[in-house]
Structures are given as C-alpha cells and as structure tokens.
Image (cartoon, rainbow, N blue to C red; front, side, top):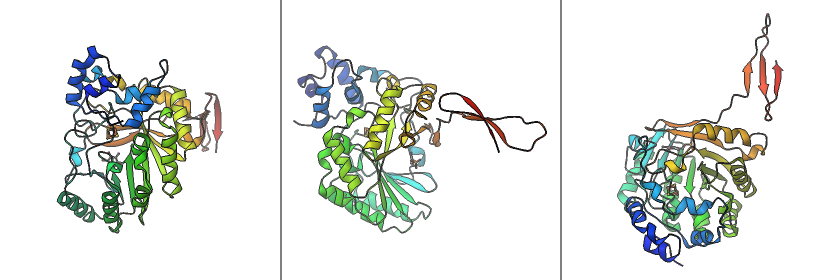
Length: 351
Ligand SMILES: *Cc1c(COP(=O)(O)O)cnc(C)c1O
Ligand code: SF4
C-alpha cells in the first residue's frame, strides 16, 4: 500500500463516490490530502454507525469549500510574530521552530492549512542557521517547540542534528516536539528515531490525537517506545464536532491517553481556519464538555481547554467553570464561599 494523495487514488481505494469527484478535486486543489497506509487500513475497518472518527478527520469533504465570514488564512496570527523565517516568537520564554511544512497526513481542520502541505519545503541549511542564531540571540527563550509540519517526518539523522544544535544553546533548557507521527505512521518510530531524540536537555513529545480509535496496537507500541526511553509524553486534542464532542468520546480519549502514559495537556477549541466550520463547536458546548469530565474522570484525564485568540494574542484557558462564589457574612472578616461540587450540589466553605 502507498500513501494516498489524489482524488483518483481515493476513488480507486473506494473511499469516495464517483459523483463527488469534481467537488473534491476543488477541495484538494485548495488543501492537500495525505493518507498513510496505516490510516487507510483503519478507515477500512471503520464500522457504519460509529462516529467514523478517522474518515472525518482525514478524507476531503465538499463542506471545506464553505468559507465562513469569520474564518481566516492565518487563524492564530503566526505571521504576526514570525521574526525570522520558521520561528514564531509570541511568548517571552518560548518559541516555535518549524523546520518543515509537510505532515504524513493532512487533517481536514488543520489550523495551518494555508501553509502546511502547500509546497513541500523545508528550511534550507542557511535558513535553519539563521533560526538558531535568532534563538541564540534571545536569552529569554527557555523552551523551543518544534512544530510545523511534523518534525518527526524528518529523517532521524537530520532531526538529531537539529536537536543537538538546540541542546548546545545554554539558555534553551526544554525542547518540545508536536507530532502526529506515532499515531499515523508508527513505523517511523524506530530505534534510530528514539536515539535521535536523546539529548541532554529535557525533551517532551506532544502527541496530536483526537479519538480513542486512533490507538491501535502499533500506535500504542510506538508511544510505549518513546515513554520507555524516558521521554515524557503529553497530548493535544482539537475539539471536533461529530468526532469527540460528547462526554463519552472525550472521556474515552483522555483515558486512552492516560493508560498509554500520555498526560492530557490541551483541548483546543477549533481555530477559525478556512473551510472548517463543519468541525467547530461553540465555546459554550466545549465548556459543558469540560464540566462533564471534571469529577467523573480521574484528575489525570483533565486537559486544559484553550482558545487561541485570533490575531496572534496567544492561547487562553476557556474551560473555567466558576465552582465557587463569595458569600456575604455580616460582621465577620472571615472568608466565606459557596462552592459547587462536581455533581452540582452546593456547600459552604469558611476559612
Ligand atoms: C501554542 C504556542 C506556543 C506554546 O504554548 P504553550 O501554552 O506553552 O503550550 C508557543 N508559541 C506559539 C506561537 C504558539 O502558538
Ligand atoms: S498534523 Fe498538525 S500541522 Fe499537520 S495537518 Fe494535522 S493539524 Fe495540520
């Protein structure tokens, strides 16, 4: 099996209907398609009547041609803070470094879909060196986050050179890699890849996963290899309508992550990327989901629900249900609160 990249291949694999091909060609002209053999296999195993979570995440859909007025080409304002090519320095203590703009798969809701997969390009040696010089010139940068594109799509040797270069910058104490590779192209997580990730500084791997059904045996094994090498894993999930927007689907995903020793980190509210409105829930729906997780699922299973403010203003937590409110206690200086438990019952807290 090969990687599927065209509508003709999708048709041949029986994944799209012939009458849809014209519209879908319009879609694929705008936004790249890529399905690894591993995903193709998983899609073929999906049973009608389930959420079809894999299909919906990766197969092009004509709804992508609908561009809603609020949607943007650069939904999270990356370009606002791109000082040097490939570096986005928005927050004081950390920056993104994007060595490549390709991924093994293209998520239909990708927030960087205007850039990622457009024309396969990686930073040149010179551009990379300029990026490193920039990071060196900014002593406040404590963490470098490799993203893109998918950094684990790089050859281990190349990735290792890059990581070692970062390792040598004294003020960079933490390196984080955001990736989908362990879940969509598990075979890339070889011994050589694991060895490539071993540096002196702390390195974290953040896995992008949106549904429990992504965790097949090879995926679990790939994640185990990473964790067994002493590399902590965290997760990021995009809240997606019809895929993980029920308490059960979201809770199941969080438990699956934790069971695989991956600490849920962020649940992203779906960004305003073009042609993605069919995936977007409301913030109110997201907040309700988060409230349903609290108390009913282990504390380990709680991600932080975040919104990336359009325009480059950064991420903010949006899950915070107010579980307490101040109570008036006349003539007393004591602190007194009305506190709500996870089942919605109220209690008094005085201190
Ligand atoms: C998301 C993001 C980060 C990482 O933010 P954390 O809250 O540390 O996960 C850093 N820089 C940019 C530009 C980002 O978009
Ligand atoms: S893995 Fe990330 S960058 Fe790549 S297509 Fe999916 S959302 Fe976009």
